[in-house]
Length: 304
Image (cartoon, rainbow, N blue to C red; front, top):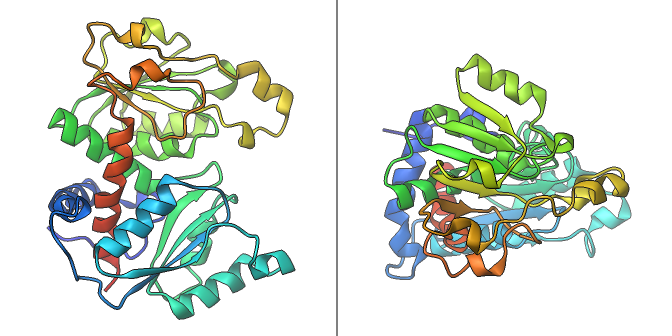
């Protein structure tokens, strides 16, 4: 089995075999991610990070992944202090970073930004989130978390809860879940339902899904509950955000006598109470760690 993608832009660019290749390679990378082994595969290589939006887990896990592989990192995690403040456009900034680094990781508020840049520079580009568009590396670490926890990700049933309209993590995730014949329960306010074009895509590929509004009534028979944050920064009207804020909150008592896996791409606000953290089936912090071996596998595969 081999991996032939030159850029990581959308999970829809992946075949099922590509996903399985990365998941398998990530498992090999785990001992390195845990400091149990030392790796020099990317000695002398540089990763350029361009983060136009805030990030904790994605940025730090990419930096950790590159350093665990023996390489190093350059770039920026905010616009302040860069020529972007002077009016430099994305194209020019990416061209400059591509002169210094062997690959680029881009987070941007404009949907399609990573695809645009990947067609303009001569180094591999990884999409670390483009507006309300895609977040393919998050999807891969989500699948990896499920596989490491459940042993098998074929034919699972998953409830995806919260902001399904603007949530780029779930936009990517559903396409990957469909590859593995998952059954998906979408739980959200009417205002934040999964975009119709994505639902149409799922219908075309015969992915089984249902649309619900109640959290408590729809998590008793699923394998995974995937919570998401209502994203204030994505709402054009602050009043619309206030209407849906706090509608879904998972509490420890909701999970009594349940072994359902609880996941969240983080950060959380009020959608998972702190008493869930102590439960054995709370996987969101482990999920964040799994971003390191997954991103190690991706960097190892595209940086030559």
